[in-house]
Amino acid sequence: MDIKRDRFLRLVDKRVNSALKRIRLIGNLADTRHYSYTDEERKRIVSTLQAELNEVKSSFNKRKKTNFSIKDD
Image (cartoon, rainbow, N blue to C red; front, side, top):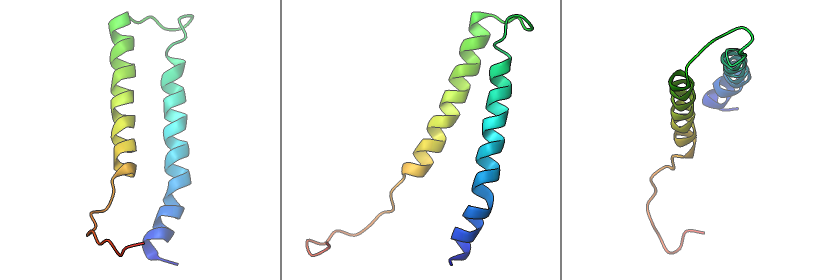
């Protein structure tokens, strides 16, 4: 197997699960029984997380530049 693929497989579960855990912890801050925040703070948190997620999505959607040939199938 490819070294880059091995490295990806070794890291992906740990990193994604770590990110999910931390996002859930941030979500816990929305519990108004324990925390107080302004609407502006809520918007900043959500927009910052969304912007970063958009960057990640963009990184995965980048296509490699290829040369065109009518014979490529």
